[in-house]
Length: 152
View (cartoon, rainbow, N blue to C red):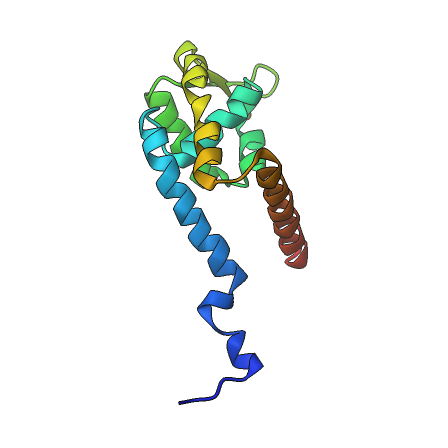
């Protein structure tokens, strides 16, 4: 039997914060999948729709900033949402270089169907609203600290 030092314990998978977050993200995705399948959305598409349900007729750049996505990732998502008749893309009248994203009536109506998703996720988590809010605040603070550490 090999004796492990405290330094060795730091290299154990079960002690890694990053793996706890990574595996939790996978668990979230498994819970979200059937809920979003009913809406005809993937998780990244759902995130775009959340941004648009908050504020419609938004520049692509703003959606990318809110979701921390570059245009190379965001553009195909938007094209698929447009093909599903959930959004429309138009050029800004003030600046033709800017593309605006707006909900279609079908995209607006989908909001009502999506209202059950957050409640289902909260129920699956077993957390109270307060616990979930505290976790979210801690994770956002951690994300911001990590981004600051790498100069973002």
